[in-house]
Length: 219
Figure: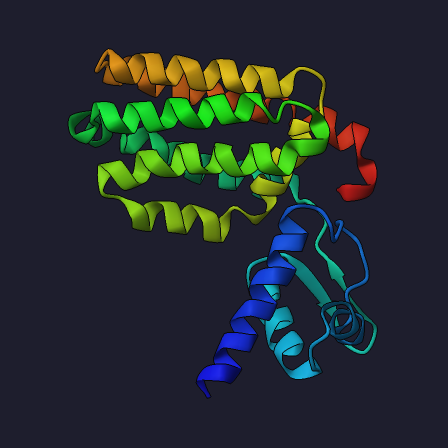
């Protein structure tokens, strides 16, 4: 049973990862048979994974017809953005209280690594460092569950982040915004950090409509 559960989780996580990084693009046909062949596993773990992905809003099942990767829902993006921004702003005070120089140094190291991935073809690596940067804020504040909640619900927002990274100048802007956040952290300035977090988050939301026009097939 443990082996079965492990295979189910591995299958689910791999399919989810490929949806989130746009390897499986919005609107793509992802029938159980096709996924089973793609990932080299039997239909049973794939079938369970598809049900879980539907619950996460990442696939849409049309009974007796087809199963497709969900297209990006702009209203859901805005709702997920609200959840993330609200939670991140809420943990700022506790983060500043608990943050050490080691944490600030770690965040700067993540920025330095991001600078190596500013070529768009490395955006997945850039995105992973970006996520870890923000995850550290929640972990340091002692609010790991809040981060887990964000990761579980932000299925449409996170795909928007990937598209956003393909736009000209965005990655450099991300780095600048992260550096502003670290400056506020080193200054122990909670209000400046909260404002930097808001500006960082708002910059993505402002581009949503442009992304929908540039990549209409994904919406």
